[in-house]
Length: 84
Ligand SMILES: [Zn+2]
Image (cartoon, rainbow, N blue to C red; front, side, top):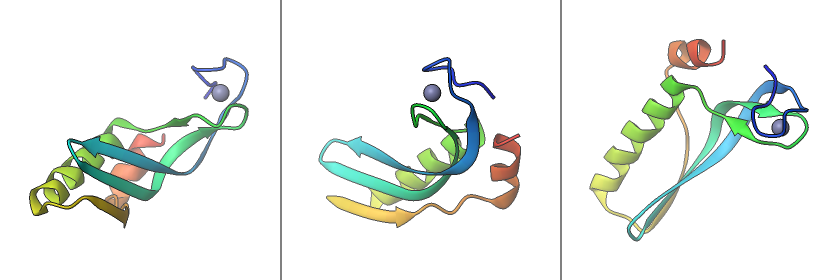
C-alpha cells in the first residue's frame, strides 16, 4: 500500500518497535508486525495488532513496573488479518 505519511514510499511487511507510556510506566514492545514504509520508515499497525498491543499493555501495567521491554506475541491469525 502507498504510504499515507510521505505519499512517496510503499509499505512492506516487517517488524517495528512500539513504545507505550502511561504515567510513570514505559512499555516497549519489540518485534511488532507492521507495514513499514520503504521511504520514510513510518510503521503502520493493523487494528488487530493495535488491540492486541493495548490489551497486553493493560495486563503489564496492572503488574506495576517502571520500564519493561517485551517481545510482542500476536496471535498468528490476528497478525495475518491485519497485514492484508
Ligand atoms: Zn512514507
